Length: 472
Image (tube, rainbow, N blue to C red; front, side):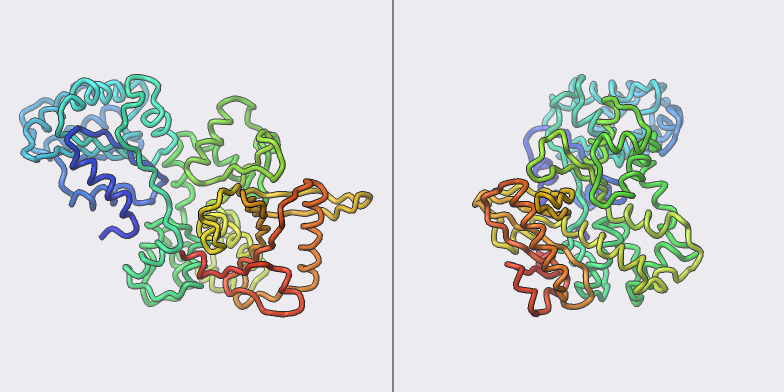
């Protein structure tokens, strides 16, 4: 059963009902549910389907493709020597198919593109020279190697340029979608527990599918990551290797960003990683951003060239904080309850979840239809000018001349605003107004799982949002 992919399913079915042939690319990170979406949408019925082999040679890829051709009912042929011959055989499979719409599904296409392979030439010939001239073919290509898909299919500069009929970038589930999925899986979790789970797993459906009924959230996290046979214990090494053919430079960028909460400018990243200052470095940053591992954002009032890059992937943050050192305690997560390390991680992880749900925050504030720019802001202390020094993780700069200054605070109960926080918030507002000269009204907003405890300092906030608002 498909959960929370109604839009994507509708797009695929609409393409299948068209009176023209369609060429569709579906891409997204490992474990996000690309293959499941396509199989469930079409009831696992295809005129032809095939999946590439990870790390297979060209000969092995062709052999596997031949086996898929036979599975599709084509038996009277010799194994192809190259991809041009292989796709000629695929044409015959399509011709023989009795289906009104011949759905051809090629999964993990990037794995099939080995060194000096003629795969893309053959794919180009199959679509441009044959399938596109028909009215009954739906060609769907899919890959976890998002960077490869963007370069070779989506932004192809050769014969496949501008040939796609539809591209679907499959995104992680939101909190609301994870709630629906957890309900489908029969997991008894309240919204606070769902939020905590999202802080660890993000919105990756496969990770959620491994959660076991009858276990507490802490027990489930121990079983997934820290038990001797934990299924996700080594997920990190496979995650980036499945997306990037040479993952080492990407991992260097990720590791550097993992050390900086607020993110780093391009120059800082170059110094931290030791990678060359070339167009390739910029391309790697763009690829990591397109995969959802990092985000690129501007500080309020700064020029575009001063953009910051910040690590936002929940699972990767969890890995660097708790898994990288490979703890041997099989009950590690349960035993981390209320420790300084877990509390510090909780605050950071909650901030990332909020940044991933800005649309929901805007909706809760009643400004879903207002044009906004989301950014961060910071400044150094300058006592002579009356500047205290500030770090603001989320500003929502609105077209209606209001700036929402968002404070994101994780708490297991109603958040108690202290005099120190209230004073610090006033200092942030002062710094922002003095240095940027903004004429917009500044409305402080608190986002905390259980809201705020009313006291002498809580009125500093114009609006208070809870975890419930993030589930919109």
